[in-house]
Each structure stands twice: as structure tokens, then as C-alpha cells.
Amino acid sequence: MLTKLEIELLKLWRKPRTYLGFAGMAAIVGLVLMAMKLGDPFSHMQARLAQDFIVVGSFVNAPFLTRHLLDGIVYTFLPLFACLVCGDLIVSEAADGTLRAVLCRPVSRTSVVVSKYAAGALYVLALVFGTGMLAYVAGWAFLGRGSLVELSRGVWVFPEGAAILRLLAAYGLVAASMLAVGSIALAISTFLSNSNGSIIGAMVVMYSSAIVGEIEYFARVKPYLFTTYMDEWRHLFVDPIDTGVVLKCVAVMAAYAAVSLAIGLVVFCRRDVLS
Amino acid sequence: MSDVVLETRNLTKNFRRRRAVDDLSLRVFDGDIYGFLGPNGAGKSTTIRMLVGLIRPRRGSALLFGTNVQADRTRALKQVGALVESPTFYKYLSARENLKLFARLSGGCSEKRIDEALDVVGLLDRGRDKVKTFSHGMLQRLGIAQALLPNPKLVILDEPTSGLDPQGMKDVRELIVGLARDQKMTIFLSSHLLYEVEQICSRVGIINQGRLIAEGNVAQLLRDEVELVEFKVGDGVRAAKVFDSFPEVELLDCLGDSLSVRMPSDRVPELNRALVKANVDVYAVFPKTTSLEDFFLDLIREGGSADKAGD
Image (cartoon, rainbow over all chains, first blue to last red; front, side, top):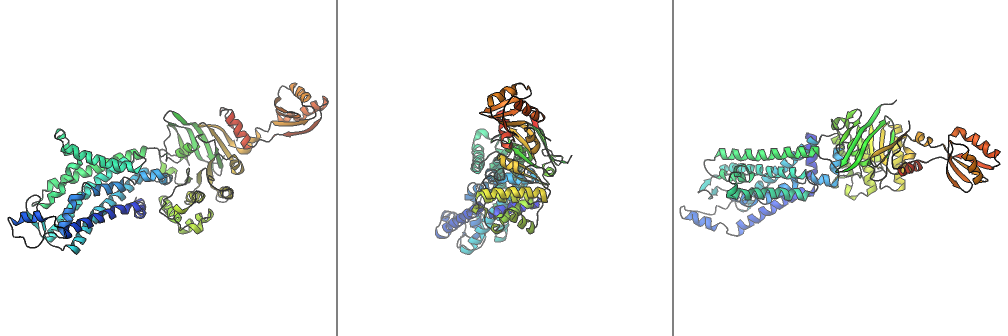
């Protein structure tokens, strides 16, 4: 299995599409950084704080950038790039015929899917944590370090050390969400013969789930929708952390990932390879 | 009898309502170069896909070295190298990297073995080039190298000379014969090129509309047809009258003074004597040799209903 995982990672490493996600996230980090450095998008927050506190200097720093970047990417770029790679792992090889060549070898179909899934999962982890690290390093270079000021659920100030740990945990929860989305894309790709279909399909599933979760009529299904938990990383920026909520988020995402993988395995192991 | 290396038992596959392969049973023995012949759409590639487990049969089974492919693909394919339809590779990797990658899926192999495989197909000097720069013929040759890489006992090749120039086709044919002769590999190759199959195969199976319509030793299959005899005579009309008196002689064709008949070969001297006795000048009598192409076309014309078997 390790050999197959190595092979999948080598293919990912050499495929130009892999770098689209990293390049895209780097561009977004650059844009947000530029806005924070050159503009003054948080003046209203500063003004709000000044009503109760004496604010010296700016709280726009590396932890602030890394934390606020998540607001803009959890429902947009991260799932898109996760799907772009995970949804392509099987279907692109089925379409160009290389899957046929692989399956003519003495390898089990289960091991092929699991190794691709594992490679996709590693990619998602690298993408999410890579984005966080890049944001932090770029923020440190251009905005400086310091405590993290969090205003979304009250006013919280976390010293830099604690802020880094919370940021790591938050990016971890986001990575769990992206693994669920990537798994859905991979599962959908086992039904299709074109990678665009699996990418669009997974995004449609995600947005439909988010919309359904907002409709009162579907309130009873909301707890079972993975999108309900995609924002739970915010709970990591209050004190004390509600570990129950965090663990539930991890469990739901793991369940979605596991069920998607199982569906993908069943479909892939039974399908005729005709390409 | 030699060991059975590859066997299908009542293999059947449907695509929706269309039956692509119908109750196909064939056997390939150790050391055979087995030609799997059929016109386009006959079911050759579908059969090969079932042989390597790419598609599941509706009924029946495929066995490689006695192992059922459906039950245990990994074990069944352990000693098999295959090139199924057009060769495909990772375009962003070099030829050598592709071979290395595929070799690792079969347990790995040395750099020397990769060099040997590239050398055998004449691509040693292009090993470091990305596959996306390769022509179709080069890809075909790389596909064969990929199939040979794990040093298999059975090589399954689907139209191996497709897309090659005449010299390339000749090279591949010589390579296949060499593999069977020198490395004792068993070869199962599909083709619609009758000349190719006749030249290199020891046994042949002919498939049409999904059904095996003939199978056996190439020489034996053709020898069965040697009862066709052609007579060159002075007077075709009188000769035809003489033939009428022999109930076992079937006149097939009469073109002027050239007559083709189907008859038991041991009656030829008697018929010749009868012609001479009837004052018909006989200029030549010769068995009409049937090429595999004639044989194949006859079978296809008969609608694939005549099941024939050689040794």
C-alpha cells in the first residue's frame, strides 16, 4: 500500500494541476495581505474596540491575517481546490486510459482507490496547512507578530503562543471539512467519466447542503448536514473552547469522509473499465 | 498435452441488450503464440478486458494459470504482462519514469531491466524524453515494453502492431516470435491482420459476433481445407460431366477450363484417370491451398455459424 501511495504522490507532484491550488491560495493570501497592509478595512472594528478599551497601535498582524483569511476561503477557494485535485484522481486516469494500464497490473482495485484517497487527503492537508503557514509567515513579514484580537463572539485577546495553537486547531477543523468535501468529489468521480463533472458535482452537493441547512422547513435534517459544521472552527476563538462542539464537527466530517470513501470503493470495484 | 495457461469458460458479456461476447470457451497452452482473430467489433477487446479483469462477465469465467480472474485478480495477473487497446501513459512523465512506475505496481524491477525493455523496443535513447513528445508508433512500442517489464510468463497483446509502420510491424512480429522462442513466453495476441497471425501464430481462435467460430492449430485448420482441388483441363464442359458421375465430388467453381472442386484427396488419382478415359486433356491438378485469409473470410461469410476446430 505504501508503494502505491508513493506512486500516487509522485503523480500528484508531477501534475501541473496540483500546483493550481497552491498558486491560487498564495494569490489570495497576497491579496488579503495587501488589503490589510495598504487599506484600512478594520477601522470599524478598531472604532468599536475604542469605545471600551484603549487601543494602542494596530491589531492587524500575522495571527489576525491567518485567522481572518479563513472567513473568505472555507466555503469558496479551499473546497474548490480540494475538489479540483480529489475529484480528478480517478476520473482523469479513467478518461485518458492510464487507469486501464494500472488495472492490468496485479493490484487490487481497493488498494488503488485507498491509495488515491490517501494521496488526496495528504494534498488537502498540505493545501490547508500550507495556506495557514503562508498567511502567518507573510503576515509576520509585512504586518508583524503579536496577540490575536477576536471580536466575533465577544472580545477576546489571545497571546501569540495561544493564538498559534488555536489557529492550528482551527485550520485542522477546516482541513477535516475539506477532507469531507474532497471525499465526496472522489466518490462522485467513480460514477463519471469526466473530471469537471465530479468537481462541479461536489461543489453542488456542498452548496445545496448549505442552502438546505438554512431553510426552516429542513430544520430536522440540519444536524446531519456536514455544512452545518463547516463553521465550527469559530468556536476555537472563544474561551473556554466547547470541546463537545469541536469533537462533533470532527466526527461528522469523518463520517462523511468514510461513507464517501465506502461508496467510492463499492462503485469503483464493481464498475467496468471501458475507457 | 501442455499446461493450460489461459482459459475462458462460457464467457459471456452484454452491453445493455447487445451481446458482445457469447458463450466463449477457448484455451491457450504453455508456449503457444495464440492469435485471436476477428473483424472489428467481433468482441476481441471485450474478451481481453475480461481476461485482465477490467470488465466483469455476465456469465462464465476467465482463468489465468488456473486462477479465476474475477475471484482473485491480483493472483491471476501475477505472471501476466498486458497491453490492452491503445497504449496509455502519464504524459507528464518520461518513458523511463512511466516504466518504473508500472514496474513498481508489479513489485518493482531493476534499472537494468528497464534498459533491456526499452532496448528491445528500440527506445533506449528516448527513455528520458517525456511521453507527450512520442508518436503513436513509439507509444505502441513503449506499451509493449511495459507489458514485458515484469518478465511475465503470459503476454496479452491487443492489436500490438496497430499504428506501426511496415518496418515497425515486422520488428514487433519478430519480437513476439523471439519472446516465445527464446524466453518461453506464451503470447495471446488479438489482431484483425490475417497475414500477421498466419505468419507468427501457432494456434488461432476466430471470433465473430462474439462467438468463437473456429479454434485450433493454424496448419491443421488450413489442412482441413486442402480437399479443395483445382483442375486445369482442355474441355471444362466435358470435365464437369465426368465430375457429375462422382457423387462425393462437389464442383465449386468453373472458370473456362479451370475447375475447382471439393473432394476427398484420396480420390484425386481416380478422378484424373476418369478424365483421361473420357478424352479430357488434363494439364494440371493441384491442391488449392487456403490462406488463413480465405479461411477467415469463408467463415465470416458463412455467418459464423460453422464451428470448426483443429488440434
